[in-house]
Image 1 (cartoon, rainbow, N blue to C red):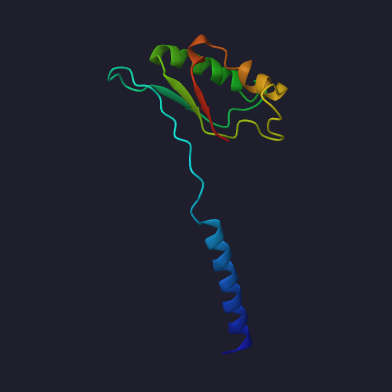
Image 2: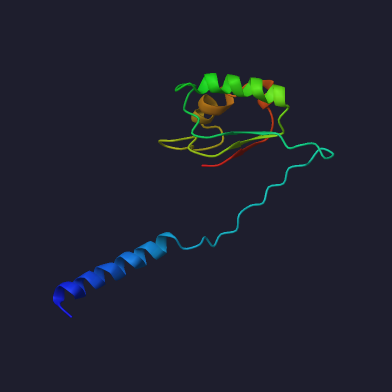
Length: 119
């Protein structure tokens, strides 16, 4: 075996080890959320992700449309897939960014349902 082949094999082994670390299965338990079902009625929900910040980037327009759709569909809840509080995240439940980008934006009565937030 030549030196070049030995170096290539060593690099390949390192890369495979790093890759296996990146794709190893998660060991943490996920929290199971259950939502009550209304006597066989269909489950109605909205899904939103990467919603913008401080009512900018069309966030307020999307929130308005979500409110209209939520009212028409009589939704049960909203799922937010993530990328909601970028940059510095949130420091606490009373963080100004939470109010500017969520509480003060999704104000339609039809959206005052449970929200399941991911990030």
